[in-house]
Image (tube, rainbow, N blue to C red; front, side, top):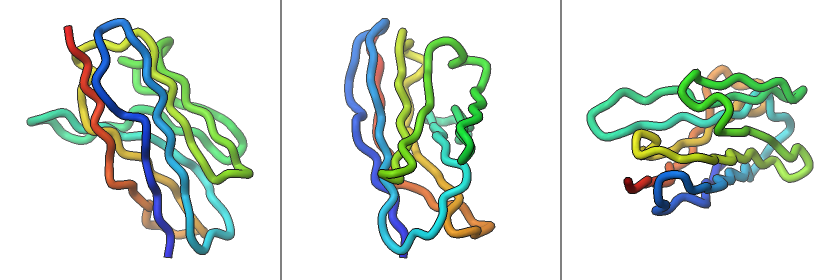
Length: 117
């Protein structure tokens, strides 16, 4: 069984920074893409950023230039560095990963990020 555990969320003022981490554990043979989604109150879950096993990254337009996704394959961990945070970035952030060739993504439990104005 595989688990994803996020950490690093919290309360920050607008303009501040946070770094989220997500570590995968369990019976892991391979991890393909890893990514971050977020869901704000009353809104649909949206993809924030994705990083492939080869390090190629993709971002949603609203975070380009402010957020950076990275991964440490030796630690089975993905990170999301968030700079210049805005109140509209407030959401629960979830990490995902394609593990062991499964067509079904593994999901973390989510971590709250709150940006005050």
